[in-house]
Structures are given as structure tokens and as C-alpha cells.
Length: 376
Image (cartoon, rainbow, N blue to C red):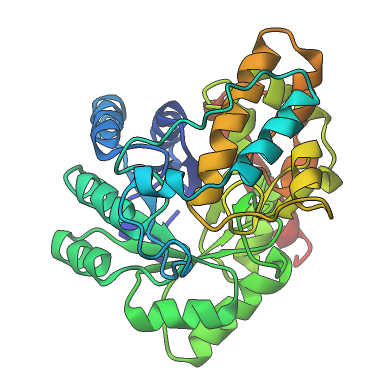
């Protein structure tokens, strides 16, 4: 294919695969798509190792990196400069509430929350440190979410010839990003897994494409949110997008970082089994719904904490849940969850990443061919 996104990034087929797993990234890029490594869970040193491995595996195929540099910081955490300070700000009420949920499902807790390594977690300074690592590698795209791409990213991207992408959930956000100078807009509908807005993908894509054109911007748009098939990708491109940004579909691959228990739950899940909740990161994020979310969003909850404190409570808890489930605790499996979108209802089996890329290609071609045939 040949459009602005393909020319900017060097990809053969504009299927962008966001994943926290380097194996997925490498497999997709080698299969002709475009893998994007989510960097947030790594320290700068760990990210260096991950990207060096990808460089050695992709045989020059293009790939990218996604970081989170939040534009807006909650005033309650704005002055905190270390993870030790952040951990100390988490009160016993929240620790005990999390432990109580786990205890009801037979999961032992130590009563102590481990403190994240320094330079880990979703904060502006951590995101910028990860960005510096990413630019030391031959990436063909860098993406940012949770606000306007920082000036440092835009400047370094232009200096190195690396396109900068930004995720948005509303047309006004897309216009702000275009004005700031980003190269690619990823318009993500509320169906998406992880941090997302409320406008559906079907409405958001034409709305963003039209708004950018009317404002005089030729910034290409990638469609995101609930896209699990090549036919959906074709539909979004018919609506004006130049490719698809996908995430949830890769969680049901054996290469993904997800556990077998979660992949089993994905296959069994319906599209109505997800929830948009602050109970994992402190900002609204769609994930597979469990009793964890019901408790934190319920009337007896102490309330969710701001980012990144909520993640410092939830991530150790979910690590314990996964360990308990893997050890045979059937009750713990009920709490197994991860960030996933409403497209989970379209997951029918677990397939290798390469096979997913191939299926997208074939379904895309079939959908375009069927549509063209109606015009004859």
C-alpha cells in the first residue's frame, strides 16, 4: 500500500500493533505490519535491552515506540519527586481495601506494597527518560498519549526524521495536536482497551478527519478502538483513516505478555464484559471487568487514587492474582484481568501474531473487493 502513513513510517501494510511484548512487535513488523512497543512498564535500562533485542530480530523492518508523558498532573501528586515518596503517600485505607479484595478470593498478601524502582511509572519525567532511550534506536515512529506531545519529543523527532504520533479521543484534542505539530493522529474510540475517551470509533474517525481537513491540516489519521479484523480496518479507511492502530487483538497471541488464564478469559468474553474504570491506573481505562473493579467503583470504596499512585496499589495486586491463578487457585482466576477493549467479543481463539497479520491482510482485501464489486 502507498499512502502518507506508509511513506512516513516505511510500513508495507498500515496495521499498527501496539504491544508491551517485544515478541509481538518483532513478529508483526517482520510480517509486513508495524509493531509498536509500549514502553511504560520499563525502566530506561530495561527499555534499552528490549529495543536492542528488537533491533537484532526485525532485519531492518520498521517499528516504533509508545511512551506516556502525561500533560496534566493531579495536584495531589504534582510535588512528589520519587517513588519512595509516592509509596509513602498511599494510606492504610487503600492498602487494606486492596488486600481485602484479594483475601476474599483466597490470595495471600504480605500487607506491604512493594515500591516501584525509581524512574518507573507514568510520570512526565519517566516518560521523557524513556523517550531519550527510544531515540537512540532506529525507530520509525514515536507515539505519546495522555495529552499534547511534549515539545522535547516534537523537536527530537524532527531532528532525527522520526514521525511523532499522538493518541486522541475527541476532535478538539486532534486539532490541538495538529497545531502542536504532530505528524500522525491516532484517533481512538471509547471501545479501545487501556486509556480511552467516550466517543465511539465509528463516530470519532470521520469527525476527526473532517475537522482536520476543515482546519487546513493534512495530518494523516490512524483509526483505533475495537478494531479486531481486516474488514473493520477497511471500513475505517473508507471513513478517511489511513490505517489501523490495534492493541487488544494481540493480547490473544501466544507471544503476548498475557497469561494463559487471561487468554482463556478473552476467548470466552463478550463485548459487554469490559469496563471503563480508574481502578487500575487512576485514569479511565478499559479492561476486563472483575470483582476488583466492582469493589473500587462501588459505594464502600475509599475512592481511587490519582495516577501514578493507583497503579502502585493495583499492579502488585494483579501480580499476586496472576501468581495465585497460575498456582491453581480457581478463585483467583475470577480476578484475572488486563487492559482490553470491547473488541474482545470478536476473539474466537489464540493465534500467532504472524497469523493475525495475515488474517488482517486477507480480510481487508476481501472487504475492499466486495465493496468495489457493488459499484460495478
